View 1: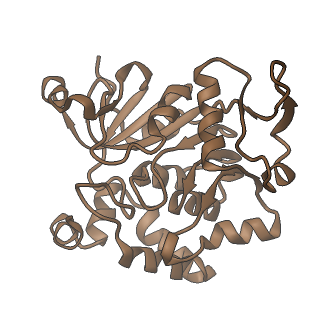
View 2: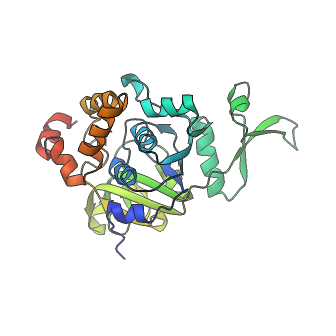
View 3: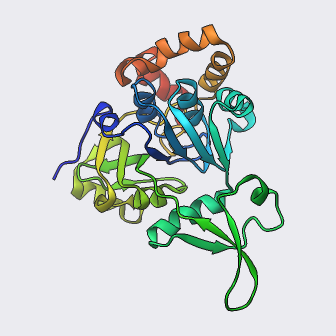
Length: 287
């Protein structure tokens, strides 16, 4: 059965107030085509779950879609801080829960195991337990050791980008898998965008690189350059020139509206065209 959708089809299936887990990490393999479609929609009050967040979180905050963020980090690495994220963190316009990378993965894993929480030592001896009251300390009933209970994270939706997929929803990741498989397994609905959709028999030749399985996938969207302006190894690297353009726009209100009109409130074909076209992108960003 074909699960091929458009980006707008995916957004139509995401309700207001949904918990949305977003795959990738930092400036690597973020599902930016799906995120831009969500940013130009009328969705609101979303609860984002990210491990190492970047432009996807900042863009959705900057377009007023977000009520809460669960995160370990949000920023642009060596390129600087995330302007909209920082502003919302300082003025309190969005709720934030600070987790660690491991506790986010543990929270997702608890859902996979159908448990209310997972025990861990992560967070002990740190300020994490002071700033996040979602975690509870308890005594190990067998050995008496003090442990941390990490509550299960249950996203309504997962948005992921993969190198290749087939129409049934199997997804190939040719680089670091990050926490994408955990997101896919825990979400009520999982949507993939892919650089290219292949026939199933061809996709299966990738063997162990098939990280996401069709049994947990609701829909798949073919989106060439769908991770831009983050990278999608080994197809292309992060577009640091565009990162600079984004950051400059996000720091200024009038420039931000111009950026949205130019790059967000357009379809994927026009987006690529405004970046100079596929040939120009390929010449500049090929690994």
